[in-house]
Image (tube, rainbow, N blue to C red; front, side, top):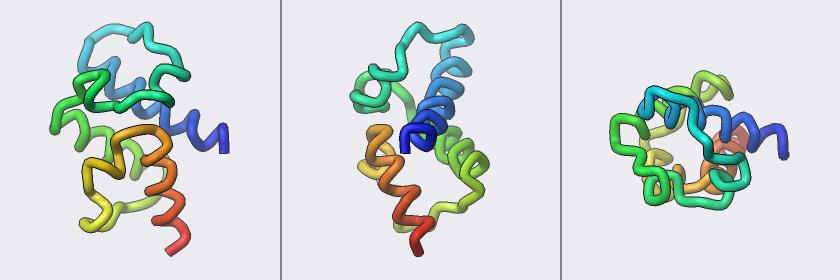
Length: 88
């Protein structure tokens, strides 16, 4: 499960680095334990980019019903959303 979450964290880092234009100094633990959009100010376009990056990385396509902000609020909620999607 840890490698799975690290994959999610890498996707979040990529989005944060793209929006900042520089390498972020945030640690894995900070991202894992924080609200992505409240703590790091990810906007709606960046959230869409994150969702697309997750779909590509994990070779899935989220259903419209899964595209709720609470499903992408934290690394844990993203992991649960992906796991539930794969189980279907």
